[in-house]
Length: 156
Image 1 (cartoon, rainbow, N blue to C red):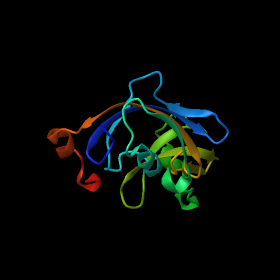
Image 2 (image 1 turned 30 degrees about the vertical axis):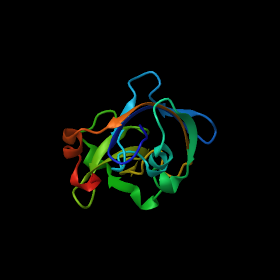
Image 3 (image 1 turned 30 degrees about the horizontal axis):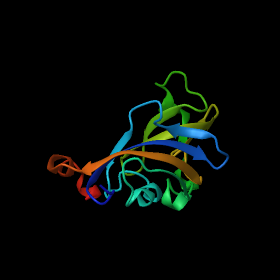
Image 4 (image 1 turned 90 degrees about the vertical axis):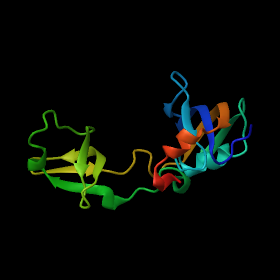
């Protein structure tokens, strides 16, 4: 069966930066699964999977605009240190949840701090990077009615 919209796909991957460093992957774990055509994975990888079948292996370079997007410096926030008073172990590199101006929770990484302010970067860690996916398609089947019904309205 070929990968098309509404197929359930299982695949292993290694995600590499342009320098070849492995950044993420599933090789030592369960394969990643998703329903094709519903924006559950980055667009560049979903496009590359279209039409493939179980057993296919390939490498795909994905530019930022088809991956995790370009870096957006407006997503680097300067926050009062007092907002982190209840957080023990605050240090550079720590990931934390913060609430944005619209009241939505965002994952951010502390990138700088001093006695008055904490700078938190809420860009995706891979934003602005061209990525290389090394992929092995494990299985392809029609998605069940239940799997399709469980998709959120924004993914339909």
